[in-house]
Length: 125
Length: 125
Image (cartoon, rainbow over all chains, first blue to last red; front, side):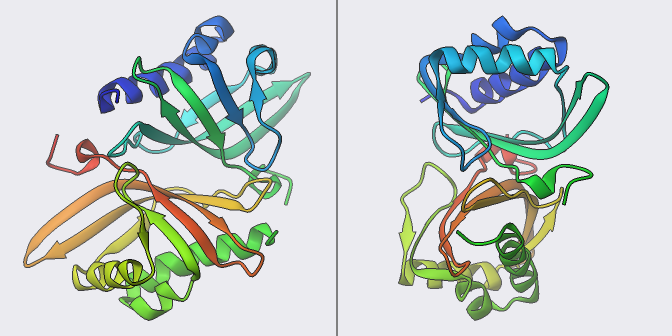
């Protein structure tokens, strides 16, 4: 089980690298067999789908602003609540979101679940 | 699948009823076969363990302060980030925590996972 500080550092690196627009650095935080369900309730993404997804996020100028300290657990999981803002061809969107992640022994993300619904998007409701 | 507003109302009622010290009202928000893993990484609680756990929370004067709007999903799940303060025989403890929940079709909580580690407790770390 990775140390709590290792998991929290990985989630902080996730935020920082998305905000820098560094898709390869974001993708490197994930285990090769990682699964992303974001938003929860949509089909899981794996492998190349994850690679494509983060390149798209960077193309949309995704910017994450944490709204509270990252939470750990008593196991191999951690979580972060944030607002994500995207800017796609001048259309700015803000979503109130929250991710939970599990990690392998090397501190790589094995599963990410993103909690946000349509009514968590500013301006939609 | 319950409506997003139904799940968010259930999580708000969870906060409000804990803060009122109304353990039966909190327990009534859960399906009979619900499972609680709080904190994540500890053995799951079911049935009478859940009843006992919430009565203990009320005895410890647990008080939840949400730190961001409740998040929904595109499925049967929602999440809330909060600070929980307890007061046990004069010893006040504050924990930075975050819960994810799944719901049944009647809007009852079927699973609750609480994310917090020892270093999310103010004063421990």
